[in-house]
Amino acid sequence: MSLPWLREPWLQVVSDIQSQRFGHAHCVPARADLGADSFCQALVDYLLCLKPQAKACGACKSCLLQQAGTHPDYYEVSSEDDKAIGVGKIRELTQRLQETANQHGAKIAWIKDAERMTVEAANALLKTLEEPTENTYILLTPVKTNALLPTLRSRMRLHKFNEPSWPETEAWLMQKLGRSLSGEEQLQCRHLAGSPLTALSLLEGKHVDETDHVAQLAQAMCRSGTWPQPSKQDWSSWLNASEAWLQELIRLRQRVAAERLRFPHLSDLAHDWLQRQQITVSELNAWLALCYNLRKLTSEQSGLNAPLLLQQQWLQWKHKP
Image 1 (cartoon, one colour):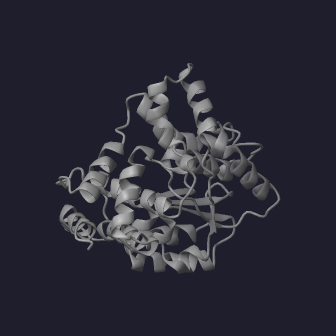
Image 2 (cartoon, rainbow, N blue to C red):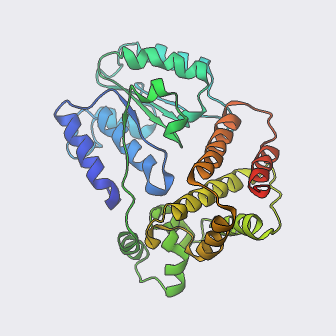
């Protein structure tokens, strides 16, 4: 595993597989900023490989089929155009998992965007989780694990990745870039310490930092600034920023260490507002839960006016007495 913060969890799953302690159902949070996709792809390849060691051998027939994208025992389900994953897709998947493996090895199902499964689809998956066929593995990668049905979560092993510290992230960024970071770059990326791949994309000009969105929300909330006008194209970015800002306010209310703050340049503004409004952690958590619910709702139902629904949530912040 080339990403240093993933090496320990990778060694653990390899050990579990080799000692036959690896269960059949697994949930990995879809942390693109930590390389979760790379971890999951390596895991799928390893489980399908006929001669794995520290990783998939890359040379056996099963590995070659997987590399060509034609492995008959690998199944992938994901959301299309941000729509819900319906029960039909899951029933088709579970039926295939009941069949005998074509290559006489493992059968793997990777359900991406797993939080977008409808309730009916999730319930259709339950039976397979409860009574899996031999050598069958199911991998779910939701953006938010708590968006899954509790009955699903209780039947899977939840994998968690530890976020690297800023010194660890900085050292990795320097290695990838082949140079030291300037003072401006350090300031620009420090709040992304726990999201090293996002920090790298930002430095390479491939990522738009959400800090500007968060700053605009902070000004609107705390200083009666202009509220954003999200569109169908960018409302998701504003939802991300809303979650990030509420999470920061919770950290401030809980008095976490300064180095754990993502937006330290907004701390004074936030502290003053929290003091004036006497906002509690419970209230902030309730607002954050509404954001999570909006994400789930829009993933399961098409035709909703998501920008308007987000603005209605902001009204609660705006009109807090």
